[in-house]
Length: 327
Image (cartoon, rainbow, N blue to C red; front, side):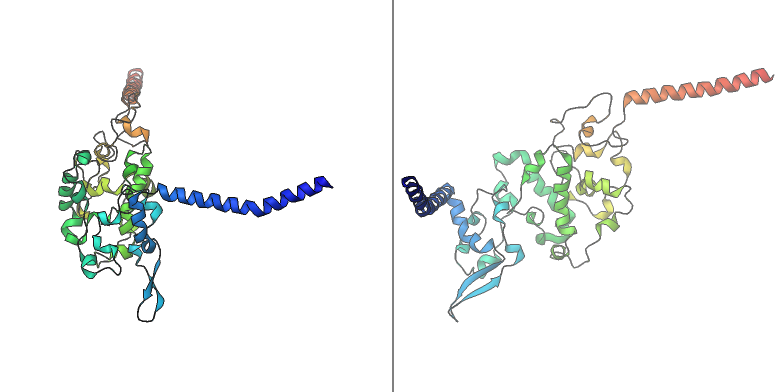
């Protein structure tokens, strides 16, 4: 009986105090997590309180009730993407006017021109290897800039709240292709975004590339800019997008010993990729895929020439013997 009483007392103790201990642990954990947040993150929470959601709530001073409004899709920020992006250490007001800390935001602040990449990255030795000044010059020559002027900025392609350049260091070329092509398709496969800068109908990408043989494999293994941008060996990624009339359409541009892929898609890691060897031309390409014409093998070339000569010699010998014995 005493044993039963002890067990019952232990059960009651656990029932009463366990929730308290658990809740206390959770509270401590939340406090620790809050302490780990940087000052910038804590300040950003004021903005994300509205901009991380599809709607925002405000006090209606006329009706003394809570008002709700739908947030414009372009103003909704995904915190997870932002805190995994290249700009994750910034606070919102590093790029947006300080006046945005007050709600409702003033018309003057909303109409103020946003900073662009070169405003922060230009002239900074830390980013010199990326050649931002040269990128700006190339972009100014591109069809995006010359046709759309100030309507087309860096942010049309590089969403500042989620942009992550780490894909450039990815050793899997297909990942780089998918990442970069998605940037192009974010406009060219999205009629709503496309018509922000153009009143023309968005062309169907598949139909416009009907001439391209084995279309699906090309889209998986080659970026749009390989054919639609003027390559510059000093830049990791070409930014001088050409008019469609000047797009590369000759297969030999890629499928040859002097393949343009070496100056574009494979330019960023030519020194990092391991050479395959065994007599292959442009063997760096073989780390990802075999490109007909660009990956010729000098040993196979010699063997094929020898086989051709032997076959030709056999035919000549056979004809000569037939003529000789006929006589």
